[in-house]
Amino acid sequence: MRGKGFLTAIVLVLIACTTGLFAATLNVGAGKPYATISAALADAGVGDTIIVDPGTYAEAIKVTKPGIKIYGPNRDVEPYTQNRGPEAVIVHTTPPATVMVDLGAGATAAGVEFNGFKIDGENKAIQTGKTAAQAGSDDIFAYNIVTNFDGKGVGGGGPNCQIAHNLVTNIINLSGTGGNTGIHTSTGGTAGATLKIIYNTLININYAGIQPGNQSYYDVMGNNIQNTGRHGINIGSNSRFVRVIGNRIANVNYQDNRTDEDTGGIRAYCNPPFINSDIEIAYNTVENAMNGLHFRGSMCDETRDEWNGVDGCNPFSAGGCTYPGVLKGEYQHPMGIPPNMTVHDNNFINCLNWGINAFRPIQPGDCGYTDPPVVLDAQNNYIEGNINGDVSTTVTQNNNPAASIILGDSDGDGIDDWEEIYIYGTDPNDADQDNDGVLDGVQLKLGGDPKNGTPAPGPVPGPGDSDGDGYYDWYEALVGTSWTDKNDYPKLGDINKNGVIDNGDAAIVYNFVLGKIEGFGFDPDRMDVNQDGVVNNLDANILFNKFLGIAGYSILPYRP
Image (cartoon, rainbow, N blue to C red; front, side, top):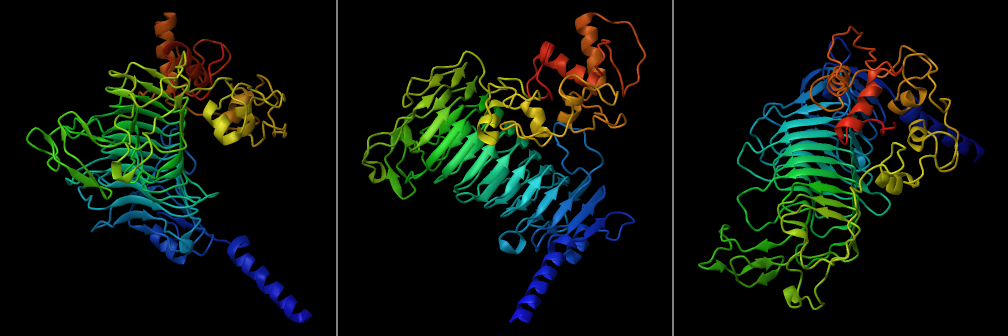
């Protein structure tokens, strides 16, 4: 018996070694052992790592083994706010695959990471159900660019799936089939294993920026959504345990010549039998949409053939319920406000219709519904400049609008208020919660814990410059460069996205603000136009915060 147990232990150790300690690294690129990612995947084992060089790869990527990590040349480099180097670009095969990058689904290929690539659909009109990338359970799809695609940008989902820090742009309609979405998941999470759609930037999307389907247990947090056709975030019907927190949504256009106002920066798509519940919408900013927050409903406008009557709209059926005909301008399809829903600390600004639109709630008699109409209780939202007003008649009027925009960093520690509350559990009004002399944001960047004083590995608190490279130690810690190596310092950026690197921006701003129009020489990598002892990547942040008030681009809060 003793010998048998010993043999079993040896076998277990060998298995552990083959799946972990001896995981291989496979290299892909010109002159490397593998010319294609697919060839490397064919040889890769469970838990292996594939490193891909810059180049163009016309192949359909499909992962069939769990735990494989596939890293491009821009691994962990933000695709919207940081300068990236040459890309590894995935382009269409001929004929096009249904999914260009498929990380697999289920236990057979769980726990895959795909990080640091560009997926380019090349503006080919091939929608018909195509998806640029698809992730599954326990997968991480992060720091990628998905662009120029006719179809769905990123799909999939599942428990513990993360779709994070990606740039999804130009998801367009070339093939005549609408509904093109930036991130459109088909599977939610489970209790304790939430699907996370976080910190993505979505720009120029034909239909909806983010659209989870009829699923539950998902978080949509910290995303930047601009220029979408119908919705910024579209909460699917029959969704439960959903959090939509800290998103920035702007320029949600009115589309399809519809006048039923069924569009919004955030839309709760609540179909009969209206079983959505447990949804929290907080700390979001919506600006320039048809509605800020909208509950799905349909107004008779006589432009949609299936409803059109002589003087109004005919009866129609949805979700197993039949609704009577109504006159033009009346709501026909009811709006379902989910139970246990909280709407607080949002900004709904300059919308064409309502800040919060919840006309025509469920009435007794709708689809056998017997309870009184549900009235949305929305608290502490900042609602201003909307054409029809703050809220429609089925929303309580006790919003107590804030005096200023709520979304921000109240204590100036480098962490947004909503992140402190929902992600880190820190106090949004205390910049140094453990009183160790290091800002909470810096301490998190260094791997410390700002709540309990866990020591962070340097730098020395205060405005020191240990390596003499012109950048404060705490600033280097925050942006991820070494504060002890003068040759490792923050490189040039473009914080206002105008195509001019920040040192040039700094000179422009100083010339404008301070009247310094005379020429001067400088090293473009190390310039200090105002002679304050701080090189201009930091100066540029200070300038744009102080003089131009541009939100969302500065690395650091302004400190005079």
